[in-house]
Length: 115
Image (cartoon, rainbow, N blue to C red):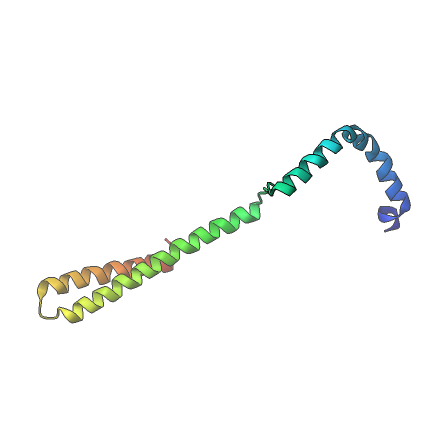
């Protein structure tokens, strides 16, 4: 542990990185000034991408799509059931109710099976 984080490791890191830091030194005041100017004007932004974030976005899109399908299917099924009860004497309404209920049931089944 001491060889990785002790004083000797620190000095070794300094010796190894000093040439790179030295070459960056002339750019540092301009970079610091630019950073402070952007911070004062509210222009700072952080851009980063991650595979994990992309995966989460994909999962959220899939969840939202399935939720919309489930709500749509359930709504069609309920609308069909209401039309069936309301139009018990009318043949046209019974057919429309059957079509709506079947479409709603199909959407629900497809949503449950994940297709």
